[in-house]
Amino acid sequence: MFDIDDKQATSSSGGPMVRLRAEVAELAGRDRSDWTGDALSQELVEMLKARERLDAEIVRTMAQWKRMRGWEADGALSPVAWLTHRAPVGASEARRLVKTARVVDDAPLLGEALADGVTTTAHINALAGVMSDRRRIVLPDHEQVLTEQARELSIRDFVVLVRRWAAIADDYLAGDTHDEHQPRNRLHASVTMDGWVDINGRLEPVAGAELLTTLDYLAPPDPKDVPDGVRSLAERRGDALAELAHWYQQGATPGGSPPSLGVVIDVATLNGDSPELARTRCDLEGVGPVTKATLERVSCGATIQRVVMAGDSITLDMGRNTRLATPTQTRAVRIRDAGCIFPSCDRPAPWCDIHHVNGWTHHGGETNVENLVCLCTRHHTLIHNTKWTIRANPDGTHTTTHPTRAP
Image 1 (spheres, rainbow, N blue to C red):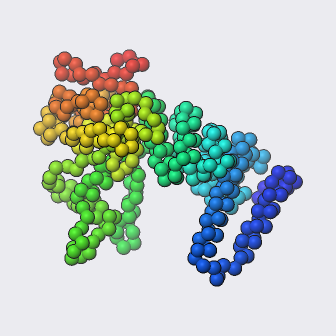
Image 2 (image 1 turned 120 degrees about the vertical axis):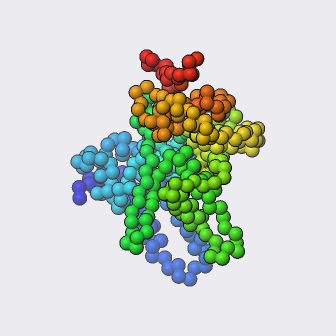
Image 3 (image 1 turned 90 degrees about the horizontal axis):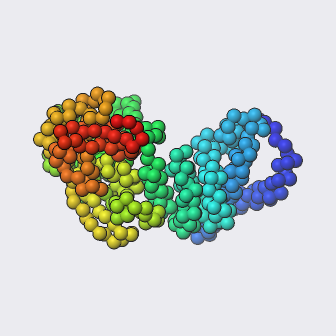
């Protein structure tokens, strides 16, 4: 353990901390064995309120300590290393504290609201959870409205709001650095001692929405009188995933029409305007807020049902289904393009998505061969998340262009 300057620690915080430890010791010594449930409930709520105020001061103090690089005085290489060595916290908790403290440092208005007790550390944690170096660039532009909403919204509603803010920030920041910050899908599978396979992973919003929609479509809720008992949601999705794998192994496909992905979007976002943060909607059903670029990408290759909203409760348009390209259309496009049309890309046609040149969501593009091209998944994502565009030429070919690069 490193040495601490006890005199400085005592003079700066020793008085209140000594009294606090004494009060906690008194709480620990209370005999609650004969307390009623109501009395215990009241005590629990009061303790949680007190802990919230202490947590707020920990975050605010850590923001100042981090800004002054206080860990360096002990020779530690990072604030996380110092915390895990000197304080009773693990590495994951230390990283969370440091990330939350940085939000308070970057957004002084939120720090003031936290100090005044009009918002909570849970609200700050929610914002820290979606923060990245890129999104931090636009945080000052939205600090005022985020602080106002943190004061007014419940923690649950604020979590949804910061996810929508993150989607708006990503749309605003979309540019040529897309590949530098785009996380990849991942899936971990391990065989257990009894031969079963444990699975866990992380999918980007579109892939996640498509998977969950498909699984729920293939395995709907069981009737209450089913002979072998009603399956849980997790059990139904597990059975559906196993069936998908089995069908693929047998060379078969499930019958019927593909399920639709539900999309809710506010009219301002649809029209490319700047909506109010508290009223914006650009959500995939079952997943939540996504970027508008993600919505435009998913509309190219999935059946979606669009709902356009004005405000929180006024439905302007239930939209229309946009269908996948038919097998005949897909075959024609793949024969024509032979592969991804992006310059220098050698991905063959069977590996490619079918992309609408004029997007369905914003430009009213139709699903016909003239409006469809082959793009590999990487370049399909690039087109929807950056400034690259595709132009159809009179001779039936297509040209990809970028406003700041030579053709």
